[in-house]
Image 1 (cartoon, rainbow, N blue to C red):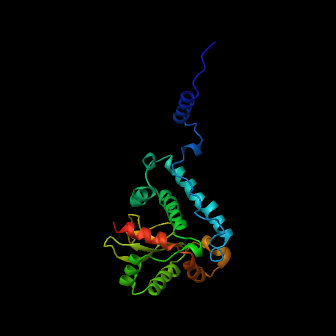
Image 2 (image 1 turned 45 degrees about the horizontal axis):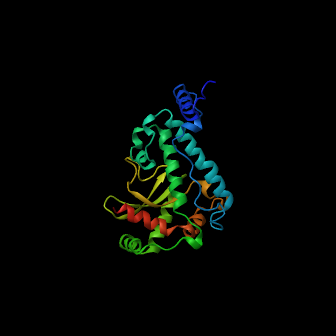
Image 3 (image 1 turned 60 degrees about the vertical axis):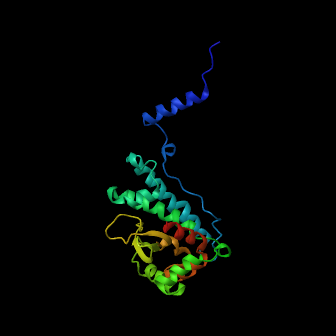
Length: 235
């Protein structure tokens, strides 16, 4: 009787053959994946509604991931690069990488800096001190941040960043740009807090009332994660 072919080497050879023949399913070639939400879609109620979270994460964010993977198939160097590294070199890539790589990074960041209101915590002592130093007070920081969110024309993001000088600053970006990108029109820095002001982030609940959305959103800011990111940005 002929000896059986070992399964694992056979499967490995088949997969490699399919890969080099261009026959591998797109999903198997994916470099980037949609992360699960760190809480239930309903966890941010009543400040961010369940339907918005389900659509925002499951459709909008997923589309950015899928489109970025489509770009990665044609740009081999993206394989194995972190999202942060891609943002820092975004000027060398096509606009589709900028839009979808930015969209993936921004949303991946956004989910982590929110939490259910009863789990949001408080800013660390170090972050509170920095906010007082650079803005005068927490209330003043929130006021300026909301102004950045409300005055961003069309779609975009408002950000609290740590500058290269290790100071806190507030900025905003259009579309899916972010402060990590090496673009001349962007104030660069390390994001520690960000608010999505695309209409898909709030329109189901707030319609055209972006100001109400921005005000209520502070109830679900995950200050533990923001503080962690602030500490990391100082290193």
